[in-house]
Image 1: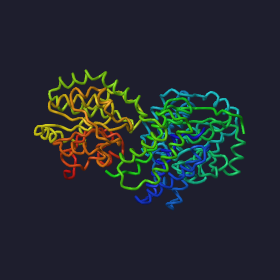
Image 2: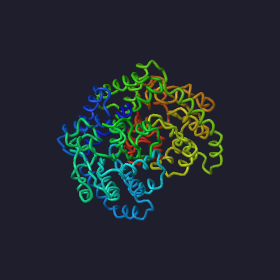
Image 3: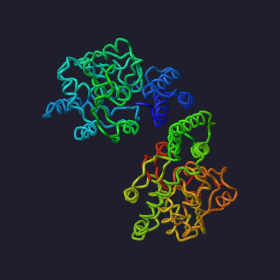
Image 4: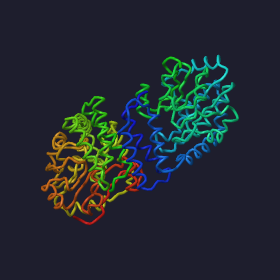
Length: 285
Length: 285
């Protein structure tokens, strides 16, 4: 997916938000905003939004000397998700189609996204909406077929807290899962620490992708992770940033997401608010 | 009101939106966005948001050679508002307190604002909400007192279409009203052409403020308008940009608005979505 100009205001908003979360005073916030304006001005064309976000958030962390501005927000999200975890598993267990229900739960968790908005969303009402909502794009049948033929799943994590919802789906898959988080902090994306806090090590092999970019920017990932990615028979890729970086990554990849911004909505040709299970286009590798 | 850094993403969004409305292709949109980034980067501190918006929209119009990118949107807003005008006047006539009802109607019309969002809002549901909603700040009693003592009102217009809602209030005032629009196009702010299309010349003396900035930026207004402003015993100032420029302009000024963005909400210390009749602070003149 190419970067749309509509993303630029969003990068600016994210830079300011990250600076405030890092405790920057007015002058430091202003300095960060000005540096971000210069960065966006000089941006080469052709970068994906996660690549640009990677640069912007790297700038904020470096300028303010803060390793992880979203640390508190991530911990708070994980706590809130763990609080409803028992209700999530009970809901899936009571469903006539537990796998389908668990897919919806995992997608519901994708509402936790401080890249789109700083608003803290109530999780249970979102879950109830997503459990009942028709899919705008639904390749679940193909996903089921691929899962039945595979011996392992690579599951690409998105945000902290969303991890708990991912856990519900992974526990339902009943097969070995490798759960890949970010190699370093960016936005509220889950790192190893966040995955462990959500209990993912109890149901999956937790690895990191060696990168601190949102989504999965192949050239920024470690060689070890790229090997895992290339060898995986099925890949479940969570969230908008993974869609932005893997929408053309071939038929092994299934993107599970909520459509939370107009740019993604336009790219997918579905309304904002949609839920999506989409098999990626393009050829493999 | 000072400019908050939160406004910067919004200026960038407005520049892109105006460029698209002016028919710019991808390359021209990109050029406008880059010029806006440079402008924001070099901005001196201390300007109000309407002053910055004035510069940004001037840049877009100059770069693209388009005198009025919002022309179609403004005409469409006026048509939509005129369609419900008979229902607006009937509603006020049926009210036990027609002036209070007309004040709410005028505030309801403030939902038409392409500075905040490009979304076209349904007017009647908004009207129903505003008629029933408690005020977050309500200086209507003071406004009534001032109106009773005054021989003329200066009414500072905001957006095209909103003009029709203003007309309902002006017709209810039962006294001479001077209706001041912008001296030239900026955003969807009403110009003389828009005021005439909305029928304001039937109930008020329509003048312009000599400026193509949003709100009322005194130094950019004509000397003639400044004289009118200084002589007016009561000023009704519509919308966020007039609040941004006149919130400290003294007790003759009453700002009527809907709070549509988090920055204004924070400045007023009320929630987004609030309705407000607020007497300005500061000393006169």
